[in-house]
Image 1 (tube, one colour):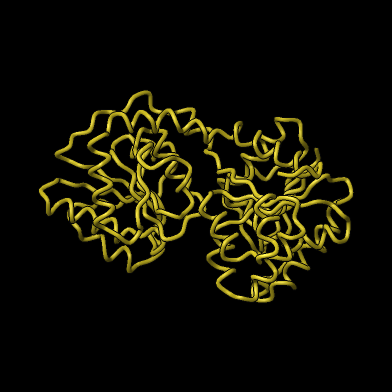
Image 2 (cartoon, helix red, strand yellow; image 1 turned 30 degrees about the vertical axis):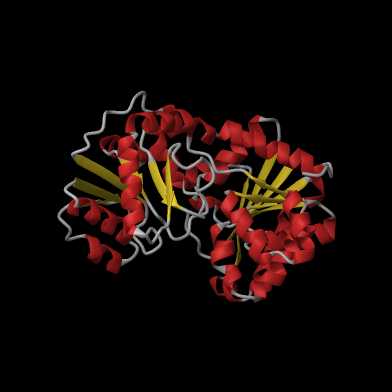
Length: 375
């Protein structure tokens, strides 16, 4: 099968490269059209993935983000100039809005079927504006498949944003396939987790230091545990994106803050800690939870967000109300009470994030939708 990807941030994320590599290993031909604003920079660490099958085009201005259909029209026209679109069997836009409308226009012009992926920014940024609800329905009505990274986002999107007459149709055409992990993590899965010392609880959060990662509520949960006599150390690893968030946590004696680091060093931080806690306000998937699992760390994640629903509660951790510090504290204690078994399950269950498994599932979805079979 010949597949065209429409991306807008291929040059700053590994997920599209890893998925396309897995699909090509299955015998597919994958071309990535990476549509970016003029003046976009490619970080040195991503230069190696800008291979011959990537068409990187600066095809719109930054200000075009305020003129949605103009921006999508520019992407559509640039694809038409750069690619022999009739040679492709299917198009996959990796965002509902950023690329999805261009895929819809390509379908109208060339009759090539398309799939869209619905992400965090689609639901929590674009669909905050009523204007985009009609566009979303237009895109998914004409798509042969709709891909979600988590069950909660699928349910939220169909329930709140799909028109009543389309709900059944969209549900039938939808699939949930989560993201995978960089091979590094699965190749370096810890063989056995160290035993927990209940008197000292070592919590970890890896991610941007901003409001969305909700570190303040994690801090409150840690303080609840400390008030009950537990010794707690909270390690926060990541780039500072919000100074107020940093100011709120940097003077706490039980917190250590570490700047962003490469995975070869980060893996040691995972192994030095016991429980991964990140009650994000919004999260499409959250690969860091899966990274933590490969190193035997049970995880605490937000109810109704990306990671929720992949496993049953209590299997590899617990979902929580992201703003409820008491619930987070209770979840930490429940993990401690069943730590060894849960840690081992995390290691064993992390295999589902293998890109080979995920690529096969996505390939089957493409084949099924492309043949017109009901999915």
